[in-house]
Image (cartoon, rainbow, N blue to C red; front, top):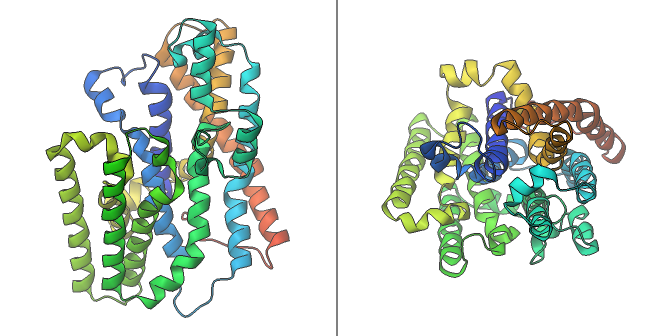
Length: 385
């Protein structure tokens, strides 16, 4: 199933996270220094939640096949080939960051004036790089250990969580095959509500446990169930009326979740626990099913699809590449406009991510699938994750 319009959305989510890290905090970057724009983009870290929901949706589109047994060897090889080569490169680049002198960039991002403060701030920006942190990062286990979720390359924590989702999928698929659609939806909603309730009641905003893989499972499961509903709708298992009913139910749930957040402002620091799952899931289903100009023209415009393809690099390489480029600007004396520096570094990040996709990520993915899988793993264009 070809869904390039979803591929394009990945770029916007990835770049929103870059904006959160480098455009909203630590530097005066236009337009994110404008109060109302800053108020919106301070929540752009939720791009990670969007990725988790989208991941579940895509896993359903690709692997939900009742009556067929999942080829686990090909599945594991495909998942490893999809995420690890570029992930490892990002980790290696991040390991070299502490060797760079702090300079103006690190001082600005750390928000500190003394060398000790900069060192502590840099550690918050690029992650912990002791031996344990390095071992956990390269084994994709950092999100499981308290104090190490941001080890080496901070954005890598979400890949540690994603690896957990991949581990769960072969266990979840047989359950989804046995349950009726209604019971699957009830189970998904129960897990969602229970997970949010526990996290809001017992976890402080920004605490490590928000990165703990099991606490994020509700987000992936929500996307997986939505993807199953979508597959059944396009596969003829639902009547048009049933499809419309499920879409309206999801839309109503999305509106209710937004009303809940705006009605109880104290919940805003907890948005990452999955409160917006229905909003993201509804948007993804709409993009996949809609025949509007936005989805059939704009989001399928080839340059946007290409940006979506390279978005994984934009996300996972952002810390080392952005900080290297900003340090180059420091050395060259380009310390004036923070806005100009941000957008120049962003273009550099996109260019490097594009080169990484075509000359490293894609060739290695194909080679690994060919050599380690029993036959090459071919996935639908536009829905790889």
